[in-house]
Image (cartoon, rainbow, N blue to C red; front, side, top):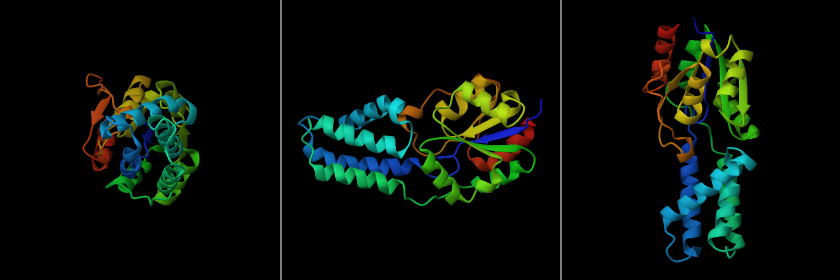
Amino acid sequence: MNLTTIGFDADDTLWHNERFFRVTQDRFAELLLDHCPPGLDRDGLDARLLAAEKRNIGHYGYGVKGFTLSMIETAIEVTEERVPASVIQELIVAGQMMLSYPIELLPHARAAVEAVACRYKVVLITKGDLLDQERKLAQSGLGDLFDAVEIVSEKTPEVYAGIFSRHGEGATRALMAGNSMRSDVVPAVEAGAWGVYVPHGEIWELEQAAAPADAPRFREISDLGALPALVEEIG
């Protein structure tokens, strides 16, 4: 069966994103370590922040706002509510700065989308803050290339099945490309689509998962420059 729809992840697939979280987390550690109790080092602080992010996803979803609130919550917890207000203010500023970083496309991003858009429906499928994702798409200059944009709270097999039914002829005739094994590849494959892993940079701990190596519809490419040829091969 021939492909009709190509899905693209956004953050760290089409443009840089995770590195801004890493820079902000470094700033978080700089601000907090002097106020932490003895015995809590950088690794321990990172673990506490990750735990807060994990339990807060259901409340705040993915993205900068949830990350900022998780930093504030962790700061209050690890200092037993003794964190200075000035540090909280610095964390708020750090979160606001993340919402203003310029968008930098990854290599081959535009060329890959343009190449497949000639023959297939192309859909941007991303998680995160609605306003922030809309801002990044507008600044990327790629918006006009997509037939549809889907900003979702979670990427599950059911979500992919629904998206590929609305924007094509179902998951079995769709392909999803992205840098997250957990969100972009595994659930797409489970929905019946092709899942193409495009590794890039550091992966957030909560986005890591084992590759579905034995799945017939799993593929891995080095970068988006290889995607048009793969799509042509699949059909």
